Image (tube, rainbow, N blue to C red):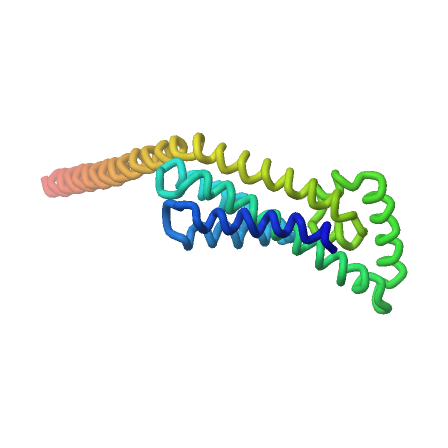
Length: 215
């Protein structure tokens, strides 16, 4: 139990240091990043990466603090992963082995997963949702070390990448949007002018034909 509490104390200490650290930008943005990262690393796909990219872009625009974005992303991703692992460890295996529909199939899948995680625990942790590592009884040392390293690479790599690459792309997209809007307005005006010219020409031809028939 003491060994498991050690990494959690590290996360708590980093969180307290972040609270005392001067952060730039609205707290809601950091809270959104934390929630999205935690959900993604718990095992719910989707929200983590886009929100981290957005936070990195905002940091590149000097609306958020890059160091805080990276630390929040790391802490939330690690915490979400640990929560998922604990859920799988204490509840997931019991749920899969409970009597009910597809009981034999679930047992075979559990045995197959046990063999995979026993042979290749690190790739399993990186590729599968965190509860799966708990279900297949990956040890705390392996899981925590892998999760901390992956969360650090994830938060720093994506955050720093979005910090440097994101703002120019956003500016370019904004410029292209302005150009597209101007082009659209010009196209609409040109279409209206062409239609007006066509209608006048047709009316002139019709009037000329009517005058010719009268003669």
